[in-house]
Length: 508
Image 1 (spheres, rainbow, N blue to C red):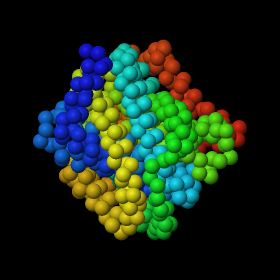
Image 2: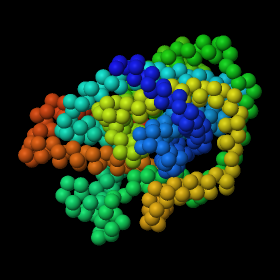
Image 3: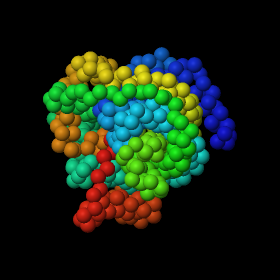
Image 4: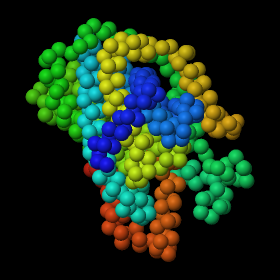
């Protein structure tokens, strides 16, 4: 079967009535998650994993996995759409990749062009989503075939690169990012060792024998962390929402946006493929390149529509690009794809080279559903601009109890232990303190997911080489990954020593 046949089979899966419903539900929730400041795609996806498990409990395992992943992926790219709404209307980015959109989007809103800015961001997001999916269809299988030849040493070095990429670019301090990576790796070692059967860091407590539940940590750090931040810092948003008059952009707006949308879609896709680069870096790069290419660079920051079209297209294309390393190599390139990987593993499906051979229904069903989901988002977002603007006005006193309830019920539904509820609260306080002191959370989440896999591959490689560590250097592919890993960590340090400012905060 060729790629087209697989894709057509994927559409047959995506067009099953329950999968259409799951895709629709995912993109609606995702847009709302993107609109609500502070929640972001990572928290949204983490919160919904237990809910999707409950919704699909009556279905066969393969079908349940497909439907759940379709919904969770919908939340992911839906949040990328929704993040622009608060950036444009309130000057408050819904998530980190929408930071750049505030620069020109909010200025357009103040000039009474909020509708045009929101519409262009929806159109740009749609085009970028389709471009990244075409790239995903063309590159997914060739990359997975190459990845089948990867040995344990290659995988160890590749996963190390994934960690270094996020650690080297996350937050204002590389040191803090590396500390968070180490904390994540340490948490990943808790439990009974799969190879030797020895209990590690359990302190003779049976509850820790199975390790710490990834979902509890993720929901605690992100969702409850934001709740504690709001409570402790008494945050209020008193700024009035800009009035939306005309919704559809003018011909002039479309003409000015066409180039930035096309260029940024391609740029964002390739940056998304790189582990750790992600949507925030893509939107930054897009804004910088559009400003350099513009005939009137001084108009940027004063309401130039290219400053909205470019970054919004780039961050959506990056979310599609980030699915490639996850599906083909089993390497999550960002925090959200790490959580998606956790969802795959929950259904005993291992993302990676064999995913397209062993579970084609899941892989191609997901890809086809993303085409459908992007179309749904465009149709929903254009007329619902005014409705989503109302979500921003939701008082915190109603919003916070809802987030707490979903967090508690979600974690308890998966674990059924009061220990996990206490851990959830502890992680919430911990998440708030970390964010308050500029410790990035994305490296911790990635390290928690990748840690056990890094350890297993290292031990497998050392078993093959009879304990000889040179296997990681004598293997050409492994050596290449290790050199790139080293450069990824060292280059930002050299740039800082020379006085360059390297600050990229990747949370999505």
